Length: 245
Ligand SMILES: [Fe+2]
Image 1 (cartoon, rainbow, N blue to C red):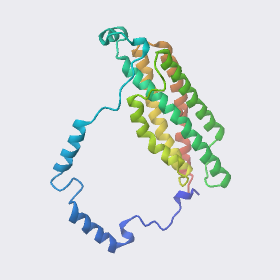
Image 2 (image 1 turned 60 degrees about the vertical axis):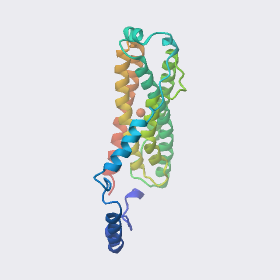
Image 3 (image 1 turned 180 degrees about the vertical axis):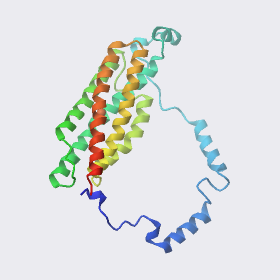
Image 4 (image 1 turned 90 degrees about the vertical axis):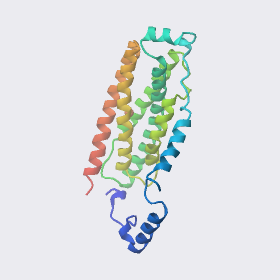
């Protein structure tokens, strides 16, 4: 039985203490009114509006050396598309695949421990997890070469790499938390793989749009491997839930 699904003295619901709940509700009603603020959300709206209007973007995309010196209009004529969009997304995938390696590393540690201690019904094949980790690493290396080929610095963090790292940071937190179970970690990695899968699909399209057939082929190969990751992780996750009694 998964440790995290056992019945116990859960005290998070308000029914646990009607007396305290009553006070809490009174306090909430007396201070801020409701979630939208004290005057139909007007304060909150103007507060958010101020920040939205004054925010700087999440950095910028470095111009590849191969495109340096070319006017933007010429570039668009040559490629049919803005190369910075492609570079932004390549940088994002590179960062994501690198993070994927680390997440699989942690998942392997968790699954091995759970299997040794008998903490889970499902035995996730460790050799398969190692295979997936290795493939994430291969994808990272391949993207590094693609960026270098375009004259880009693969160590530069692009804006979309930044945003997607923030989005996936919760996934890592779930997996490294020693209290989470195998099934909870599998659910987290499923979210990672589903996003990854859609992103590779888009990257294939972008490479084709850019007229970069060789890269598109490499990305299609990565996408096929990612399809396999999603398929397996999803099966393990579903099994880990349905096997619990
Ligand atoms: Fe993957």
